[in-house]
Image (tube, rainbow, N blue to C red; front, side, top):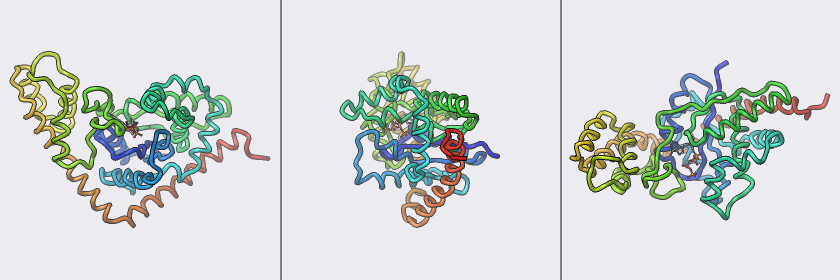
Length: 324
Ligand code: AQP
């Protein structure tokens, strides 16, 4: 049997370069070789403030982004988390074997508490348990996600080990599949690129003007040379992904003190757009074919439900929920 891969993205906004390089690139790398399930994790979406009237559209936008970047429904299953109710059933079972104190210590929980001090809810605390259930439901062994998710992967493995030792072997020990873009910094020069931090990101759907404007606004220094500012580091990091062949030349100019930042920025902006343009073209094709998208979603959910139910049958039986 092929190893299983699981990853998901929240429907909190359009995909950005951080999601693309940190998670989606990993998904693309794995879809040829493994049995992959890629999800829009809508139940995780609602742990932060959101608008119910736009939720369904946001979910669909992520599915269309997945298809546009090249996730192929012939090679992987595309899922919407809430449409496979076994996710929440398993999460509840797993929550009964895991200590609250460990969850309170997790950096992502602390970050979100600081970001939304008036929206600290049980779902936010429970997030890593639901995420563990997401992956374990499919017995996922590889999880292509950014480095910010590593603490959640550890929780997942702890839960899997504890379950196996309490009730008997069911779950594997999932590992993070690392990509070169596992951490893409914010364009603002501090923190990570994030959908919910305005000014921090470039979306996969941005046009050339938007990209140029955003890249031009990355804070740099007035002259080049010496210790790099965080903003300059971001530019060089993005160059590595989108214009690798020019990095050495720009770096030399930087070290010589002759670099004109605006030249680097415009070069980079054009290179990013050149990379995104075909993705945007494919996106348009899927937007114009809603029936096909509906069928892909329906098919993905139906296949995932069969796999999910198979695991849940084992879990219910092991945990004493099946009579003789
Ligand atoms: N800056 C990043 N660099 C590398 N990987 C990243 N990921 C997110 N930001 C970066 C990876 O993208 C996947 C999906 O993330 P998510 O949308 O489920 O949640 P997130 O990590 O909270 O992403 P955002 O953009 O920061 O969303 P908001 O602002 O809504 O919280 C994950 O694999 C993540 O590692």
